[in-house]
Amino acid sequence: MPGVPGAAGAPGAPGARRGRRPGAPDTRAAILAAARERFAAAGYAGTSIRAVAAAAGVDAALVHHYFGTKDDLFLAALELPVDPRAMIAPVVAGGLDGVGERLFRVFLQVWDDERNQASLLALVRGLAEPSGQRLLRDSLLQMVLGPVGRALDLDRPDERLALVASQMVGVVILRYLLRVEPLVSMGPEELVAAYGPTLQRYLTGPVG
Amino acid sequence: MPGVPGAAGAPGAPGARRGRRPGAPDTRAAILAAARERFAAAGYAGTSIRAVAAAAGVDAALVHHYFGTKDDLFLAALELPVDPRAMIAPVVAGGLDGVGERLFRVFLQVWDDERNQASLLALVRGLAEPSGQRLLRDSLLQMVLGPVGRALDLDRPDERLALVASQMVGVVILRYLLRVEPLVSMGPEELVAAYGPTLQRYLTGPVG
Image (cartoon, rainbow over all chains, first blue to last red; front, side, top):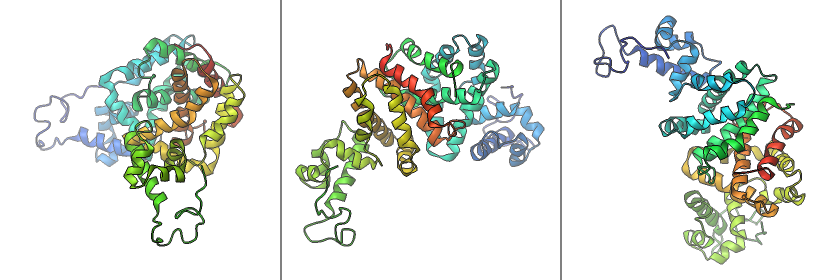
């Protein structure tokens, strides 16, 4: 995400959290609040930078200035603890060979890191509500798996990525949310041995 | 579930839903309410027929009379539209050969039936709350997959069934709750071709 040069509301900006300087309201926070609302209500595809800007009462250029692209804004709105694009890059860099195992290793690495779990689980708990369902679906398919499909130039990417997503979401629910044993106690190597071939088959095996 | 001979509250009992006859209060409903509360708070393992009876202010024998075994009571409390034990019987009757495919076919058959979806999805939406998480975990592992493991005499049943559960829950979330395409449009044969081998490997392949 691009830095926010000296903006009101940026971490460390003097006085950012107390009162408002005339002419410099907490624009960044207003944009972020508008973005959260729009993405939750209309999903990723149904949200434009322009609509977020209008809802926040600012110019679209200012949204770009503070947040970069629509993907950047979406990630900021989700408050994800990691940038999935950065995590996915080395997964796809190795090509199709062994990609299932690499993808599952990165997935474990992100989820097993306790600094990430609380905010990731908050996203998953949103499952009970339509707006949370939309955010979860879009964040997984758009931000995590979409780039995998494009980088690997998969045939039938939508089928393959939905299959992959269904296995990853199931692990999230059982291992991290429900904490079902022995899934919680199984070490990374055991888990990779179990799930790596599944993801590999979904990504590169026969489909349809 | 055993029939409830002429009990107040039983379907079709004359006047069951209007007023209460002296000496025959709606005991069945009281037991069911107590059971729901206990199972949600303490899970399947932490709930006894005796504790449910005490909470409902009745004798344990009466709970057995109305509901049968603890499994029967748990199923009644969950308000599942189907009895998973009846669905699982033909899956395991064929032995290990092709069991992954048979299990996935039955799973699809239950979930694709619109008469079942609302109550099954209600159970899944409980994921956001600890009590709902407990019910979901116990219903899946205790009532659906536990019998599979025992009937097939699996080695390392807990690992295998947790792997199976993780894939089935992922399909539930993506196909039925989030309604992610193309998973929703894929026909049963396509889905069985994709997921059957996964479940088969989890049940019979190398583990750990």
